[in-house]
Amino acid sequence: MRLNDLIEPGDPERIASGFEFTEGPVWIPEGALLFSDIPANRIYRWTSDDGVVVWREPSGHANGLTLDTQNRLVICEHGNRRVSRIEADGSVSTLADRFNEKRLNSPNDVVVRSDGTIYFTDPPYGIKPEEQEQPHNGLYRILLDGSVELLRDDFIRPNGLAFSSGESILYVDDSGRRHVRGFDMESDGGLLKSRIVADMDHPQPGSPDGMKIDVEGHLYVAGATGIWIFEPDGTLLGVIVTPERPANCAWGDEDWKSLYITARTSLYRIRVKIPGIQVGVMA
Image 1 (tube, one colour):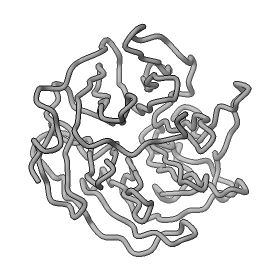
Image 2 (cartoon, one colour):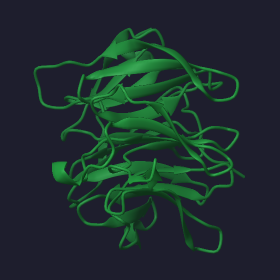
Image 3 (cartoon, helix red, strand yellow):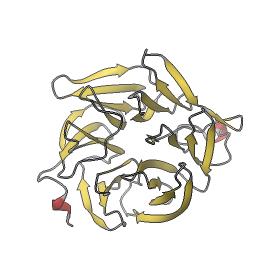
């Protein structure tokens, strides 16, 4: 397969700009995209009709966003060092802010398994070195009973994460090592052995960051120069070059064939030929 088999012709379209540092895009059932501007302490809402409006301020310096199995927004908050959730009535619940009675670092990105289990990464990007209480930069899960479990502590900078179609693999990138690891999953959501799936070392600035997967298993990973696209076995197909260095991406629109890209001061969009894996529950 070639890159042209996956991506519609043309360059990414800039659909909004003027931000400080965009991150965490997620498509919601109302037909809108939510995304974070971390330094601005805001979550924005974008639609093709209305453009960009402030959706939540302050946001706890929100970073990664996703939907759970009830379409509630799950948020990684740098400023509050927690994973939170906006409930149906608009109230905010803290899902995790400590492990072993010590504060988390700065939860970065988050995904939700089909059974409701929440997985998140916790690098120290949002804190000063002297503020770090955890002895590691971990990969965690929040179980259905609310308990927090450390799954792996052998990352330098764990960052973006995504499930394969069928949830047999959890992909997690390590920005410090500039690679993507794939973890085979147990039936109960635990992790088995891992392997390096993709090496994203590059002479240009930019380490692997947010990632998404399409329904055929191709990985779309934000990195140096743009969005890198890999076959499930790690073969690099090419890069969607973006005018600004990207931090994350998300599938959207009714057919899930638009890839929305958060890249520094702007929001971009490009059409693809194979739909992405949906998040949440769509009507």
